[in-house]
Length: 346
Image 1 (cartoon, rainbow, N blue to C red):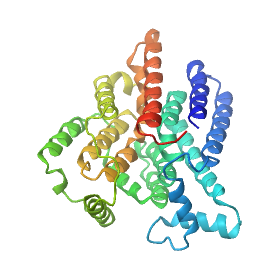
Image 2: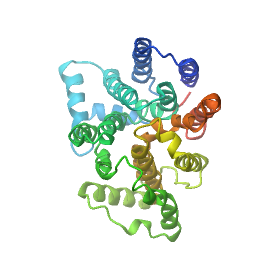
Image 3: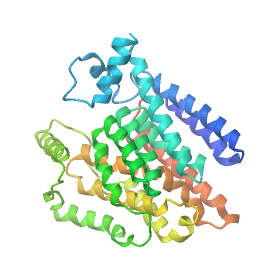
Image 4: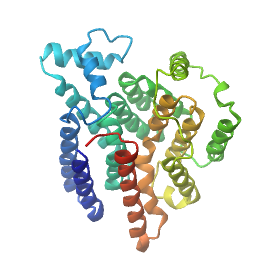
């Protein structure tokens, strides 16, 4: 599987380097890439990812109403009881939904198409479509919703957010994005979110604030009690890990060059604020690792659009430097996921 991921990375890198300009060619390439990614994720071996047996257990158990979203129950029932198909078709269905939604969102939002696909493949494809399949679909719909949100089409944003929540309830946190504008005017408060997050972390008072959403406060309390009791043994949150510090560096780099980047990326201010929220939530919820990682990655899909925009920092004749930086960044993400976080097995 690791070799296959590197082959996929090399394949996308070819299109990334040569960047076809013809729209028909691009659509054809996108469709073929999507099909490949769907089959790789949907037909994966049982020993590849950490969540395979979790979902296989959910597939076999009949009563899941208190354990999983209703969307999973409907899809499972349709595939298992109506079509009489096996577990692989459940994985394929989620892969189709997750990959297609992400690709559609990327096509709508990214001015640097293959840069965004490269970043997606290097991290979120592995994290979501191969591991956390329910939130993988949810974040795909969230990405599409973001297109309508920054265009101030609130009805369509809420429409796609309902689909996101239907596939994973944690997506309801992203409803707060309706308060986030795509303007420079109120950017300053977001500049201080990361420092404030660290301040709360060090003062050990960050978790005294409650979230006024019944489901989330209950979920937080449950996760916290389970963590303290030792039932959840996820890796501890390291707020100084290399990847997190790299993300902070990218955030402030893009903010520093906001005028250059914003002129090429119409949704820049919306996504930079969303990304600042993502990093803050990682610090704010660090007392509960599973929740910190889940919410940070939810808002963190902004990376798919923001990271490739580094290229616009450079003048036209030096864009190759930005392109090289983005490629190296994608490779680092891929290596971290495979060898450090160990999201997948060989």
